[in-house]
Amino acid sequence: MLQTGHSLGGALATLDALYLTMHLPKDVHVKAVAYGMPRVGNPAFVKLFDDKVHDFKRINLQDDIIPALPTRHTPFEFLHTKGEIRILEDGSAVGCPGNEFDLDERCHAGSVTDFVSGNFLHHLGPYPGLLRMGRPFCESEEETRSTFARVRDKVIDAGAKVIDVLKTPRKVVASFLTDVLGLP
Image (cartoon, rainbow, N blue to C red):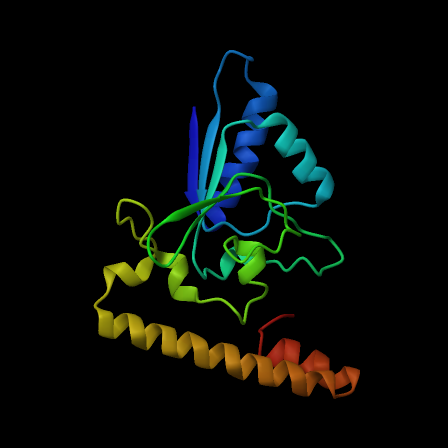
């Protein structure tokens, strides 16, 4: 049984692979391939997954930012499972141990250390076989660049607002959450 997905779909394929491995008869082979997936679990989850799921690959492109999220530096200690295959800029592939603290620059954890050091366009492909993912590949190149420029500008504006909020009283923060983010 093959589970596969890209981005959030890759994270879900990871969860499915563990669930199916633990609940299907032992003679059912479960395999999962995840493309550009974010970190899924804490150290206990990663240990359980690595112990139970034996046929798993997660494929990352050179500077994809999504596998760097959520960052390792959260209270929840999100980590990746083993099985990384990293596609380098020249199209070659490197097998990586999956150890988040192995800072080999050929592997994702050693080169894309945070959201800023990556490239969102690398998240979309091409993956092996020239497979591309995401909405931008249903648009013209001009529309794609325009979409990414708008998203970039919104992220920059939101970041500036967050920095401003951090300098303001609690009442203003509540107003920001309601007015800007639309939260109740």
